[in-house]
Length: 136
Image (cartoon, rainbow, N blue to C red; front, side, top):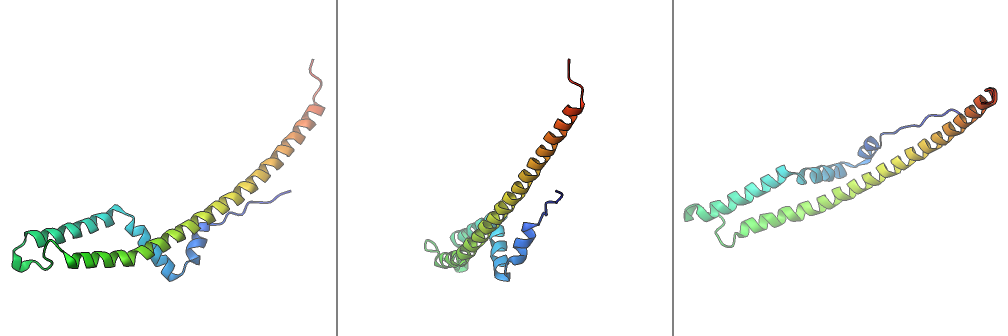
């Protein structure tokens, strides 16, 4: 019996199945989970707070110790990013399940081919042993 294992690119299939908004959520999740994003947020926060602590009173736009505008903007960023991050994580979880299912299918096919090869090898071994003269 001759057949081949069809290999499919599940990454491409998964990516092609995403809607535009799902691709955006996935992209956001990928960017937010980086050190570069952390450095941007940290720098923005440090600059904001230091400016409003150390600059002359007439140049401060969000006075200490309340920093109300900074708190408001930070909360707005969190409110908008949190659902996008959760959607992106759900999409990544579905992708991982698709990869696991594909791995399982490939493993089942490989196991079947190994069984067939083992049977053929045993058959050929029996044929060879029957044709060889008996050992003394």
